[in-house]
Every structure is written in C-alpha cells, then in structure tokens.
Length: 482
Figure 1: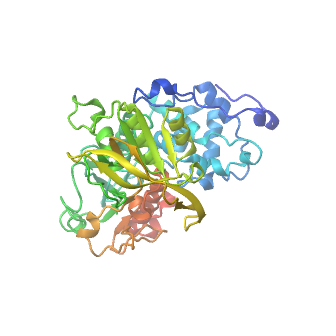
Figure 2: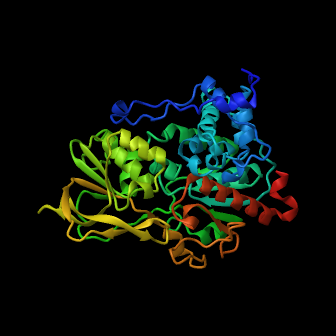
Figure 3: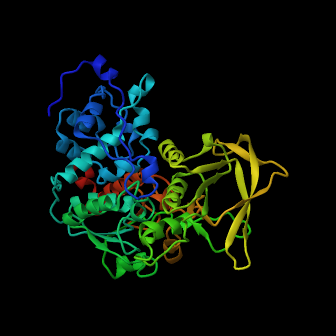
C-alpha cells in the first residue's frame, strides 16, 4: 500500500484517528487488553496527518530520540516493516512503549500540530508498527559486532536494564542480566496490568534480546545472592549497570496500616500480575477476595489507576480512588483516568485518610477520612490540601491498597557502601554518563530518578551503555561508530 498523493491542506483536514477499545461494560469482567490497535488502513491515515516538518521537534520530546518523522513517513507509504525497524534503531521495546509511555507529555506534546489541531498519534503508530512486525513473523534481528572480550553485568531486567543490555550486546560485549524474580521484565511484568500491557508482548520483546546473545539469570538477588564486588572479583565482569528500580513501597504512617486486608500497590499488583492470583485457586497466591466487596486505593498516579481498575476486574462492587487533591492535580495520565471513569471507578477527591479501622480479628472494616480543601501551591507546584476541621467520616471498606510512591531498593546500598546515594537513597550518578562513585559501576532508571516512566528509564540505559562502551574500549571506539 503506497502513500496517496495528498496536499498539506488535506493532511490537516484529517481528524486524529482514535484507537478502538473494548466496551467498558465488558472489559471490567476480563483482563484482556483495553485498546484493540489500529488497522493498517487506519494507521496509514493517521500517519498522513504528519506534515513532515523540517525541524521535527517531536524527536526532542522523546527520551530515546526515536526518528519519529521517518518512521511515520514509512507508515504513510505503507512500509510497515520498515517503520518498525526504523523505530528499533533507537528503541528496543517499541510495542511496550507504544502502550505505556506518556506520549501526551513527551513527543506528542511537542508536535507542531498542537498549536491549532490535535497532535499526531505517535504512540498509537509506534504500537501499530511494532505489533505488525511481531504478528507477521517478520522480526529482524540487528547486526552484532564481533566480540570485544569484555563482560558487563546488568542488574535488573526492567526497561533500564534491557535497554542497556541491548545496546551493549550489539556492540560486541558479553552481557548477563541478573533478575531477582522468577520471571524477566521487572516492572513491565509485575507492575503493569495485563489489560494495559499483555505479558506475551513483554516476553516477545525479551526473546529478541535472548536471540542476540544476552544471558539472563533469574532468582538472583544482587545484594543477597551475590554482591556488586563479587561480580567483579569472582565473576570477572568488567563493568556493572544497576537498574533495580524503586521497589520499596511507601506507607502513610497512620493507625491501622498493619490490619489484614491492607496492601501496598507493589504487593497487590505483583500478586495479580506475576503470581496470577486472579486465577485462584488454579494459582495458589491469592489476594483478598474482592467479589462484592469495597476496595479503596489511596493515591492518584498511574499505579493507583492500575490497582483500582484491577480490583474492579476482580469483582469489587465499589472500587474507590481516594485522593487528597482534586482531579486537576491528579498525576495519572488523562487516558488512564478516563478509562477508570468509564469502568465505574468511584473517585473520592479532596479526601485524606487518617486511620484504618478493624474488627476483633484484625481485619480491615473501614477507613476514617478527613475532607480537604485546596490552599496555596506547594513545592510541587500543585495546590496544597488543607484539612477541613470537623469533617471526618468513616467509609466502610474491606480492602485497602496504598499507592503513594516508592523508595529505592535498599540492597545495593547495604552491601556496596562505596556507591554514593542521595538523601532519598537514590544512587548518585553523573547524568552525562550514568557513572556512579564506584569505578566501572553505572546506574539508571528509578533507582536514580525515583519513580518515573519506562521511556526515561530506557534513555538512562542507553546513556549508560554508551559510556560503558567508551570506558571499556577507549574514546577511539565511540558509540557513534556503531
């Protein structure tokens, strides 16, 4: 299918092509993917909206600098496989990023069409190209340079680690990825629900890295099974990249958080996603039975939306988002908020929990909430919630999920004290190279930034890979020669 001849005026007249989705009344009863993807015809039509500006500022909005204008032009011309391969020059996980990246705050936000029109659906087109390549069985592996004789250990198989491993293996280094859990993928596997990111897609992306020669070791907790120093001294690695994420959940520090039925979002989503507790008793790692019960999720980010929509699919009669600010301040993606609203999630805004209440058997039965109003902006730029005196009331709930953020994985710090950490226990790095204070040790992703996005973590992994390569091979073998 070739691109039709079309004038700039005709391009601008094409409306943004919305992606079809499951009906909300149906999807709350299953874990199938909500969005159904573009057809080739729809993708090509959407791609024709791109005016191919001389200075494609959308690329600057992408943390890994995908050649957005070029891959969209290939879709418009009907060269879908060419588009997928163009994306993969810079992004090893396009099917994943096309689904979970906040394009509206990155590449699409900078699209020149936003001045008078709606931006090109860059994320939807990225997903289409990646899915087309995979579904047609035409996945093409990149060339791998001859072996350098150097070995690099990557700790963590999340987006930062996978991106780093991909670049390094192609440059000829031997790469081994160490993963603490029994399945690879990090937050892509345990943190994001099936209905937003099908696990078969993550596994397919991982399969490509295995075929390139990346070695994976599961059930290996670096900091317990082996230390960073031991990777150098006993395993003979020449460099180490740390991409362990921010997996230490924060709690609110209020009375009753130790009651039965109170979960962190990490535990809840890991049980459901990775341990398949949604299929209990076939799989024997249950969560509290949500059927016909009242479930409250505390927080307003994307993870909170994932948790509350999961609870709804597990049969909760009432699934609440409890958030201490208004909808305007909520940090979750607009798309996720919209989906949650369509699925019947009940938003309890300007509410702050002050105490969890339980019965004699120590099971959660309710939460005491305090109404809030918005005052002056705080350090985050959002208006600060201020309590309304005397406004407390009790909301009956059977299960609570705390989703207010995460701290840094503490194991590396505990066993490698010569790696400098910040006041918040994130690893301190040179942002130009991702080098830590320890020789030949690099870090990136949420362990450096705190909780952030998949694509930002991938960008850090690529930056580190470039620096590792130059350090191991010398500046004369720069990344740009790859």
